[in-house]
Length: 639
Image (cartoon, rainbow, N blue to C red; front, side, top):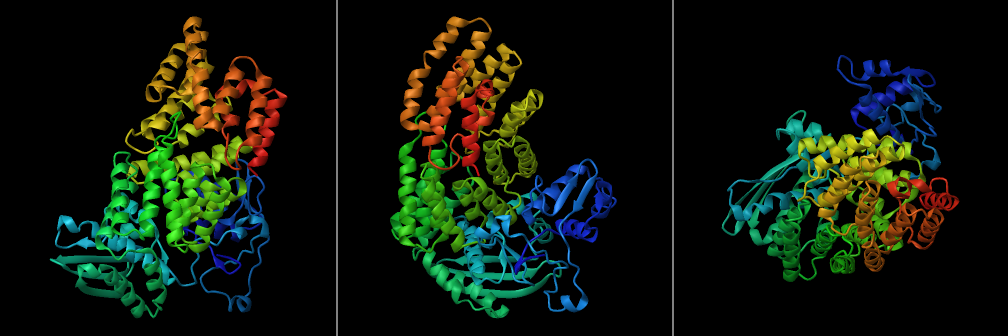
């Protein structure tokens, strides 16, 4: 399938769905017909079909609300509504042999502003690099299993010959499967795998590797190198150089890419690799150790740009663990910004440096610069889902939606991208679209949790609960919050935060249906996790007031001014939101709406105050002109 000269990557199932719709273009294709055609004989529900249609729309850049390609016929099925030109045999003779249809995409899909993600030339295939087997089993060499695989992955990507699967996805696939080549290949949709091993003997190392076509079991290319361990960087480059020679690919690009990003110090390389593995666990207990490891790598090689990106990422993770505190660990964020800038200064062509800087600048509310440097990362390396994710995180409105879709095209199981898209829809007031996106993301997330994947998102069930609560479905909101609490791991980054958020939202739900005693318990439990959480104190005061404990409620309320003052210094946007909620629950709706308008007028560009449409304690403002003005301004910012 082509968009212009760009090949769009579709799974076999999505391609089958598209071809079936094209073969019946202009006519209604019922759900039953599609289920029979695509899942003949399988016990599959309508949800699987809905998910497939949604994913196909995302690949096409289509919108269910204003479709250009696939129109939903309510309760019946789907119709392909775009004109379809059927190529004659002579016309198709000069076309690339693999696609059956060439769709001309409208110019306003929005993707033209981004480099095409994961493009591949006709005939190219996806390839994934597995961890290299430590033949001798020496514990002090174990880090090389991942280290060599990471380097070979980067070198293969630099050749431009393959669509290289991200290493994080490879590790997840191995965890999801029994580790057999066929199952890993099928899970990743990769026709080729790189399998290899290394054997260390004193100060020497031998590395062997092979590119295997999984279906046939045949080797596409072999490599065998050996030499001093101190020259492991050159040895790793020689692995891909030998692959390139056998494949007839120029390998000069590989050497240049390696020279710009690595270190000459083996110990610095080891410290970096071990620290990165700790950081990617997203375990808050491992983050301080990751910071130590990156600092060791930098001490050994002060010009090691990748180590600075790792240190900035680790410091940001440590800061993010405190971001919901009334006074976050600002020194960690400042350190992250400084180290990310140092990485860019050391290597301006390193995409990871620009992407990391974009990520940390978002937390510092330097949103304009964050978007610029994240775009730079994508321009330098348009095949990395991580860079598109960081651009998604930095940007807002339509650009965020495009970047999220690009990330998902490269990494379909990245559930958090759905959360990021839903934020835009919530800010626009389009709660139904937010709900659709969140249900898709929650389904992906729950599969990841069941498989033990590394990047299961948190917060999707919490946000879905708030969206349902805003639509007066308290029962489903409570069920979603149950699920969020079940997923909250106190040792996982953001685990404590979302456990508190789920408890707070549960308290608000119970307060809505006048279950004051249960609501009081929820708010108190939330406050055990974050003792001065302002919104939970507001909720606790309301439940106590509603149950007749006015004196206790007033004692809680008396704590709020000092907390707001603290927030105003450390988290001014949060302080303004809290002040508006205090005004709202105390019967001053015009003042509450005016504060929100003022907040949105002065806030940096981006996602500030995006939760206003679903904040439980702002619900009573729905008929107030000032609140309507705030919602209109918020929606406009999200375009």
